[in-house]
Image 1 (spheres, one colour):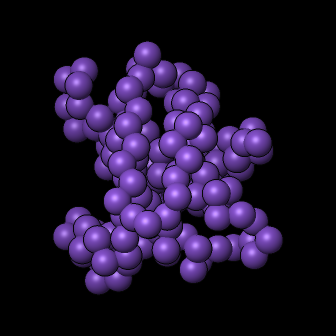
Image 2: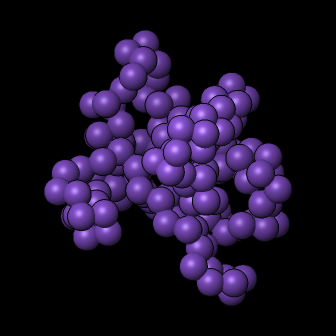
Length: 139
């Protein structure tokens, strides 16, 4: 059984039960039910700092993911989401912020599990197909 924790460091209302459910669906679908996951919702200024530090990109982003780096059971993968940037970058204007955040969370979890759409067109196709598959399962 995985341990999923959510830390909301923003003023946005975050339905923890909903996002834990989304995370569990993805982890189960990827046969990674034992994966521990930390999900943080942060401000644009905080994700900007993290993006600059870890990706050398001097701008805010919607999501950052960090894979678990050791085999220790208590280690966890991390997904950091900025609701401000997600809302600003929303692809589908009619979609609720909650659904947009769910889509970004799925994207972030897939990255944390090792998928990478920046590697090749084939990898991108595989990752985005999985993202669409899991998103379609969300109510």
